Image 1 (tube, rainbow, N blue to C red):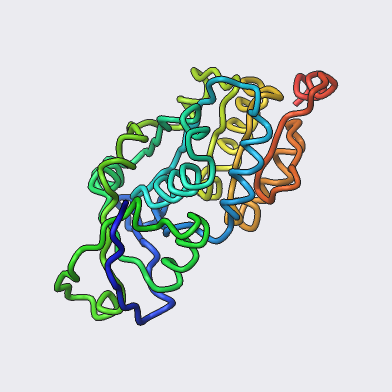
Image 2 (image 1 turned 90 degrees about the horizontal axis):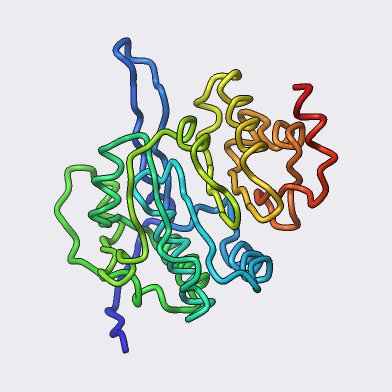
Length: 260
């Protein structure tokens, strides 16, 4: 049984991890922005969808690209385990990957500043078991005055055993991956790819994924790069769960892809 420490929260608006990666000329190449239970994905619905889809599959692979500092990875794991219990084991461990080595160092440490709103949302998604997966740490002294309105938590060792971190580039990684019975989180980085790279990735995923695969993207991808429409061109269809896509069970789309 896990003891829950009393925690006071103040500022409900600050808790997002921001990290701008720039080129030699100072232009932003990509961002590592993320947060606990990022609100463009309703995690309980995603978990329920995956539970039903893979009900009769003994082992399911989960790959989370552009994992940034790991907050979304641990969010997904907390919701998955708290809602599925022992049934979650077939989805574990997940493979979390990122292009940036510094992001992975932060992810392995698993120490985060969270706000009251983040905690309340995550705790609800995790059936009231947030502190079964995150340990409260005494507030650290920080220079940024905004951070004094948040609390510090650390992912506990149990949850860390459910994830393997790896540095990799999805453009190359996707060409070498068998996506059968695989869930791919490829979220909120598509706008940082060139138009050619976006089509290259969508085309590759269309060829390497089938109806046993699941692709998860984000609002940022849809709003800034129209990725929802792009995926439809390459044979994907959005499910009833927002930002979750599948391939059709028939092969009619294959002839279309050959002509793209």
